[in-house]
Structures are given as structure tokens and as C-alpha cells.
Image (cartoon, rainbow, N blue to C red):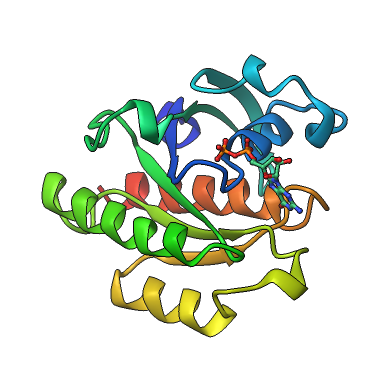
Length: 173
Ligand code: GDP
């Protein structure tokens, strides 16, 4: 049914430099996201057809530039990905602020939100532990995953997880 296949609009939020563009370019199918011309994707829209659990879904990913957006969160997303870098505690704090802001601006429990700790390949520069990320997600009532855009680790499970959450919401609506 069309209600379960989208198109879903998913918005990427997070501090500068946490890896939003890198995640978006993997989503866009870039062969080597770390070498792509990142301007190409920054602040833009990528549409992708995915097959999740044997069902197709269309996802439109919006890569927001936080610094250029001032402090306002977009109202238009079906789901939000809040990204921080595990190597940057300030970006983790920013993620919490964004979560609070989303909660204030949107009906609680209606919009799937995933907290993403990116750059998990940089183990020696880690400033935010897995447990802190997980705990923060529990407090804020959202899902949590650590990814590495550089290693392409957990990036597709992230997007697949969002599609599953969106279907659950639609199916129970
Ligand atoms: P944005 O400002 O959130 O869009 O961040 P970018 O995607 O432009 O990434 C900022 C910098 O971090 C770039 O130099 C990327 O190559 C690098 N980067 C992004 N993701 C990862 C990752 O998972 N691991 C590592 N080691 N570097 C990453």
C-alpha cells in the first residue's frame, strides 16, 4: 500500500563537521563518499528507492546546514536523524539541544527520531562513550546507533531502521 512505501521525508540535523554530508552521500550511492565533492550534496536533497524487508520505499533525505539555518528546526520532516560526532562532545550537547527543540515544536511520539553517533572508527579520539549516547537516546525517547561514514559501518542499517519506524507509525495511525 502507498501509505507504507512513502515517499518519506527524512531530515539530517547536527553540528557542523559531524558527518551529515558524508552520510548523505553514502545514501546517494557515492562510490567513495570520503572523496566526493561534498558541496554537491551539502544542504541539498537526495531521493532514493530502498527495499527494506522485501518492500520498497522512497526516501527523500534533506541535508540541513545547521549553521546556516540559525536555530530553527524544519517542520517538514516525517523523521529526523540527529547526528553528533563521538570525537566531539560539543556536537553531542548540540544534539541534545536539537532533540529538545524538536520535542517542543512537534507532537511528542509522532515523529521518529534517531540519535546517531558518527565517526565511530576514530576510537582513539572518542569523547562520548557508547553508554552516554545510549542513555541520552533513552532519556529523549528515541533510537540510537553509532555509525562510521568513513568505514561505511552501520549506515544502511540506520536508513533501514528509519523506514521500519516510519512504517510502524503509519501502520498504527
Ligand atoms: P557535515 O558538516 O556534518 O556535513 O560533515 P561532513 O560530512 O562534511 O564531514 C566533516 C568531516 O568529517 C569531513 O572531513 C569528513 O571526511 C569527515 N568524516 C565524516 N564522517 C566520518 C567518519 O565516519 N569517520 C571519519 N574518520 N571521518 C568522517
